[in-house]
Image (cartoon, rainbow, N blue to C red; front, side, top):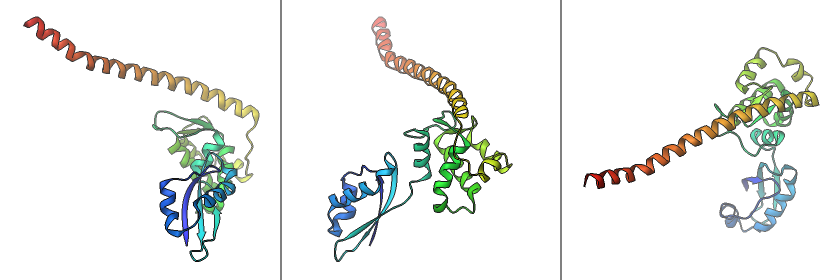
Length: 214
């Protein structure tokens, strides 16, 4: 019997959902957790698809680990914990095309893509949903540029190493973007707080007005 689990790499813990899946099979949950954690320790900080192949007669089981989703690999590559909640306005990171190619190469065997270029476009699509810039540009623009052949050289040579000079340029550009985004968030927060204060203050003002009239 196959049981599918999305585990926290190297750090799966017991919980109601896991017990619900494994309890009826009569296998030792703690043993499962230990084996899954041992098998996924190289994917710390990522959600990892795992399949348990359980022999319901002997209660023995095997752990099969699959490559994490593109989004998890991209987040690890960029050192971010989560994507943007508002991708159209706020960005979480600035990736190089080489980083995108690196993730695409890792995932290519598990993707329904005919070649590396198609896999790269799939990863770029994930960057759109995560709110990740690529080469200082919105990921949607990079999709178009890939179609136009702008990155054929890097893709065909399977370039996965970003030069230190390029890293510095990308970091500097994104530092300025982050400052702009933080200022926007502060301004919006101030506006919201002002609205709340006004809303809270209104009843008191109305009360005073009533008292004056009385």
